[in-house]
Image (cartoon, rainbow, N blue to C red; front, side, top):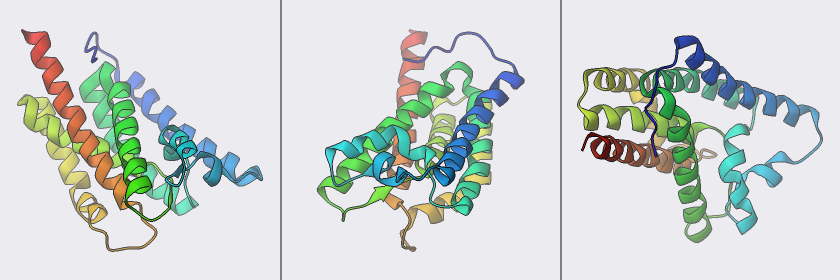
Length: 198
């Protein structure tokens, strides 16, 4: 599953990070300019099977400029840490977090929670934070451990409050499932590393 072959330069990692955030900003600008209900068509709608498309599309949608700005900075920092430390596996890790966390959010919303449409990249952000911290503990290598510590220092406090449901209008389920998906991907990464070493 994980390649871990070759090394990329810092500029290549930076391009990956800027591309990810650039897509989010581009989608937001289009959403503002084009008179289409992006939420209903592309959000993670937990009321129907068609809402499953939102697993892929909803992270690029944001409810307001402030929502987008609040997600941009942690996304930049955490994704740069991710790509710099785990090199060629960065996109696979993000894809796994997106699909696993998104599907779990949709499924629990469909079966258990009141109807909702989830948007925003916070699930991926929480997932990257969970991955970086868990992978640092699981791999027991100095660089991943230091990166995990940096992720905790940078995002530990917001992470804690982002998991406690104290505000309305916040997708805590996507926060939780994104975080758990990140830990799950760290376990898969560790298993893949062990298998490759045998």
